[in-house]
Image (cartoon, rainbow, N blue to C red; front, top):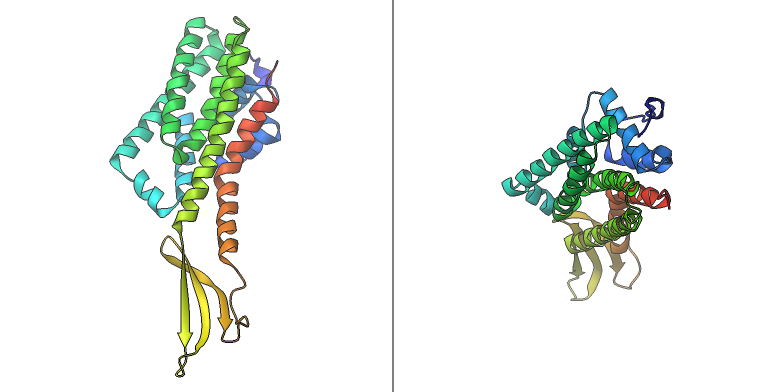
Amino acid sequence: MMSDNQLIKGFTGAFTWENIGQQIANGLISGGAGFAMGMLLDGLFAKKENMGDMFQKFADQIVERLSVKMREIVDTAFFKDNMQELINRSRSLETQYRAYLLVEEQNLLDDMEEDSFEINQKAMSLQMPAIGIFCIQKVIQIAIFEEKKKFNAKYQQLIEVEINDADKYIQDMHRLAIQKIDSAFVYDHKSQYGMDGEMEASWGNVYYEGKLLGVVDKLGKDGNPLNSDGKSLGTYKFEKYQQLEKDIINPARLIINKLKENIVK
């Protein structure tokens, strides 16, 4: 169990998805999963926030950066109900974890372990909008397993399996997001002909989710490049990939990678 002086209010800045990932990567989790959770919960408590409120912010921040089609799915009553259930269960697990830090009661630990698996599966079922919840809940789950390992050394193997599975899940979500970005692009080739029937110019319009991003590959009748924005279809896609990684995927990677680095053998 952590002593009071370990629960340093060291978390700085806003509880945003990107900031959480950066702070964990920069050492918040250096003392292990339990230490990370203690610091995070202590920071939330100091700011009079709870895990449920933070997770709702995560979901909102991530959804803002998703595609229009994904946002339409998120706005459905079915999705909202499932997200609310996930947030409520996460808030309950947070309360249990705080209680365990005070009393170290084995029954609480057993209940948390069971709940952690169910919350994990629910977060995975909601995919990208719940990726922030998934990662922080994974930290809680590993913290629980680290406590269980004190009584059963075989939990070390389970910890390694869960972290590897989490790593694979983030990779899968990244690939899925790339596929969705690619499918949202449309390249529309256009040509312009003169009175003599000869092609005077050709170009491509690049659309993303129906919105014109720019003109590429603009050529004159001799095949010479004409004025354009200097970008290609590949450039537009790469920019979307970079934004996805910065805003959503990288914080998830930072958290899971730091967990992986700090597993106590």
